Image (cartoon, rainbow, N blue to C red; front, side, top):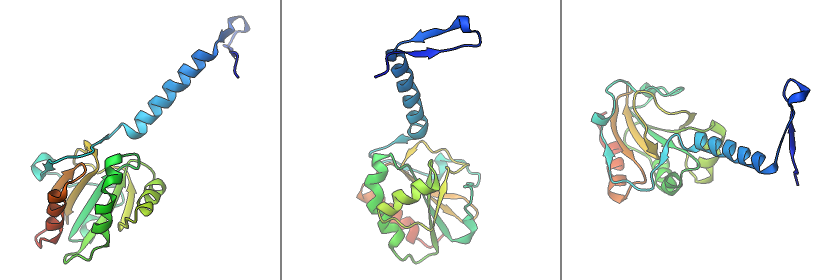
Length: 183
């Protein structure tokens, strides 16, 4: 057990002793701040009945590093975080989406605030197989929570979006939006 820690400054005469409770308190603050930075940047939405429409986001084209929205008629972006309970609860739906054959050319992209390796493992653990996994969130729209699903057409324009864990009727909306032939 730590009895005390010696902190030395530039002059030996300025040596100060700090007890173990101060060290523990400092470590707790550093850990809490780190956890906040990792998971607190985007809030976790356990359920949501709100659909975010294109009017709620900027009309500028969406930019997502490493993703070319012109390669597919539609791109469905899952914005997730491996520490998000609602994201984990949504994995079954995402698995269904990525494994189904769609009548239109649809690309599936998972975007995480974590590394590609962490996100890829998280998705693989749940059987979700997107076409691409990227680290970072889209620019051109404001992401307020995870999970968020954004349907983007060629050229990067948002067609529709949904925030939070979706109920069956919202899941159906996502299916219908992908199946619809106009981009």
